[in-house]
Length: 190
Image (cartoon, rainbow, N blue to C red; front, side, top):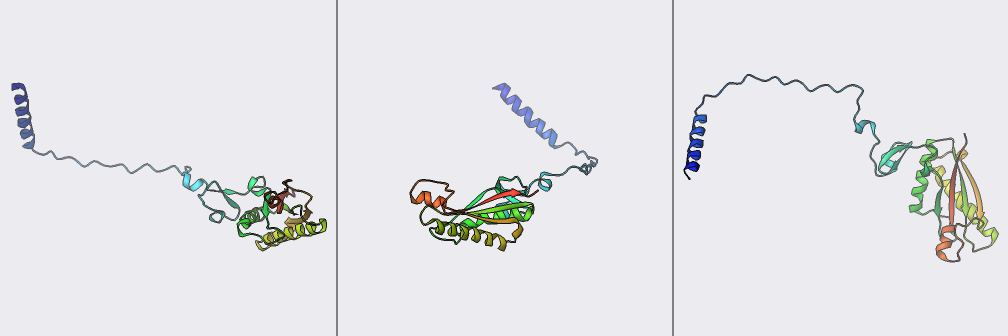
């Protein structure tokens, strides 16, 4: 107990002694300016891909892939085969299907050496003549849409297969819906 009181008293005396010491004046410290960044160093933001949530956030010759703007190249999977589907005996494009065509249009406009064959298809129901005509009308609807987007007609070719190239061979509505399509297949003309 005596040792504890002695320690406490020593602390109080030490504190009082420090409180009465005269203040020292400090000379001003010069702060060096921050080191200049080397001219050839770039930050990630300025040189890296730009963040995006859709293709419209990117430049004309870019696509938004995994939330980053990426330059369009001929070998991109996104510029490869695209399929749009149609309702039974219909040739009208659904709005949710046109997103694929807008993306394909960007690919074609970015690379004029890229060409696409639009293959119109139908399900197995109906006559051969009817299905060939329906496939051609579907391919034509896609071709017209791409042209309205500004794609050169020289990059587009149309074909119809009617019911001759099914993706699915079962005889039910789910399968027939897969076969009612226009398939866009790209190739380079280089």
